[in-house]
Amino acid sequence: MAQLARRLGVGTSALYNHVAGKEEVLARVRELVSDRIDTAVFDRAPFFDALLIWARSYRDAFARHPATIAVFATTALSGAARTTEMYERVVLAFLAAGWPDDDVMTTLVALENFILGAALDAVAPDEMFDLADATDAPALSRVTAAGRAAAHGRSSDASFEAGLDAILTGLRVRLARLSH
Amino acid sequence: MAQLARRLGVGTSALYNHVAGKEEVLARVRELVSDRIDTAVFDRAPFFDALLIWARSYRDAFARHPATIAVFATTALSGAARTTEMYERVVLAFLAAGWPDDDVMTTLVALENFILGAALDAVAPDEMFDLADATDAPALSRVTAAGRAAAHGRSSDASFEAGLDAILTGLRVRLARLSH
Image 1 (cartoon, chains in turn green, cyan):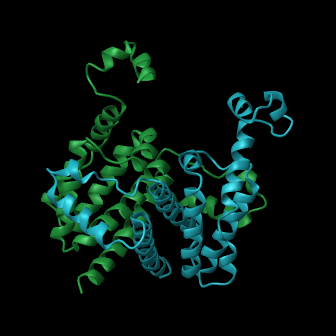
Image 2 (image 1 turned 30 degrees about the horizontal axis):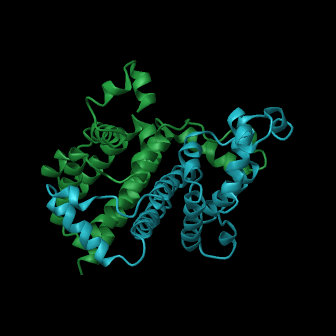
């Protein structure tokens, strides 16, 4: 809180006129990030199509604020009412799609794991491997060069779309298995 | 480097007798973490079975050192020869499984995104949602309680296994599509 006050150029006590403490600051920041996640799509698109749009907006929201990823992924959601609302909407969509109560959070968190990892990758340098460095790794060098040559746009976008497609394909299979 | 020297109780110049600078420290730490990732499995198991074992060991390696996740996910691999070797082995396995050169890194990074997100989740509190806090989110409360009641072991493990199964299922479909 003292550091934050310094960065804002105000006294620490001035901060406490607005928030109860560090936990509330984090909750408000979490809401600002999650406000950018599109849940309205669940009202207008079939479940798996909506999940795709939701996941893209979720990754974009966190890629804009990469410093928050590790913090929010590892601290309990507390006091962030609008983020809780976001989850409520998504949970209702899982249930409406036929997901069993006791598997919704397991699956939702699995999907979030992928999205948050992809949000970190979205802010990584586009060239993660120094090819000059990889003379002892000829296969790695070759596939990295081939990937770059074939890339349309950023490689992190291609990986995100490939992974999202794979995990949603697998989740369709999971839903079919759980419904029987 | 100054902070690290202080933590080790040595002079900063003593550190420079061992490493050239911060970048080398990071490369050595990256190797220590990636040394725990099982690549030998690719010599003895079919590709998708091996990928499952590799992914579990990869997540465990990073879950032991969660502070490194965001750092290594977002900085280029440089000077970490043993980590480069790890990638070389995995790339060879993708190629042997029939993966096209220009899609290996796209798919490998997609899988890593999931694994690193799951490594963050592995160090999150087991109860991410405060149910008392979620009176305005009845569906979220219900599925969270149902998930906890059904859980055998940690919920982060269940999410990791569910997501890994889903993404590998999807990658089998991807490979079949790419091979045609």
